[in-house]
Figure 1 (cartoon, protein in one colour):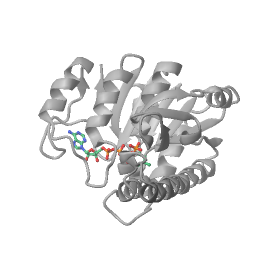
Figure 2 (cartoon, protein in one colour):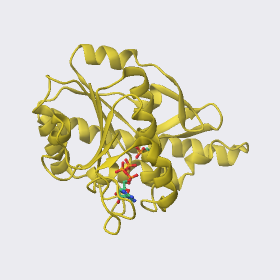
Figure 3 (cartoon, helix red, strand yellow):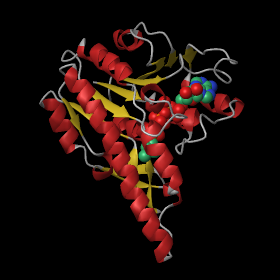
Length: 262
Ligand code: ATP
Ligand code: IP8
């Protein structure tokens, strides 16, 4: 099984207009997956991009549910609206995948997982396992979550992958971003790291400024790297450019260009 995270920076311009979606890029990714399916099973997770992040930020979802009724009422509405924004993104993914003849099936993250401070504490994977047995391609997404500590929170797609990797032990996890991989400084300034040992990640985190864009509520590249260190205990992990045709196929076939976590 291969888990592919399609980052928000790949399918949308996160600093651009609300809910912009690059359908050509997503169709290209779907085509590369269709070239390998059904020889390999896939789970797809997409991020929030210009859909979930602006709404989550606007309504302060990461702050949880406050005690006073008026603020809590506004946050509950924001929780619903953030989820709806993610469902609109998800519908665009399903359409693009189906157009490439892949049986992509939407699995709503907030109905599958419960979090505690944004980390999965409970996940019901039965539907996902059954979908895989029947050769569907489950498509999950970063989403709002019901949270044991805060009432409500955001569950990042990157965090979902850590949980799935632990439970399902995929052969490979591929993170698609809008840059060639992980850099030892800001992309364009730092050098691309082609092989990164998972025990070097904490030093790298110290060296990085740890921000991606102003609209990201889930911690950008730093959260991704922290999760990758955990995922690498169970599977092969790649960070590659999802906007360049052929790179995903390369990582799937084992001679990818990007960063490989060892
Ligand atoms: P989303 O969270 O919406 O799914 P994403 O998965 O594409 O988005 P981001 O959280 O935006 O990922 O993180 C990727 C971004 O981090 C890239 O667009 C890149 O410009 C930025 N970045 C910052 N520092 C680095 C670095 N050292 N190495 C790689 N990317 C970096
Ligand atoms: O982009 C965030 O998921 P991510 C989801 O995978 C929302 O971190 C709703 C902002």
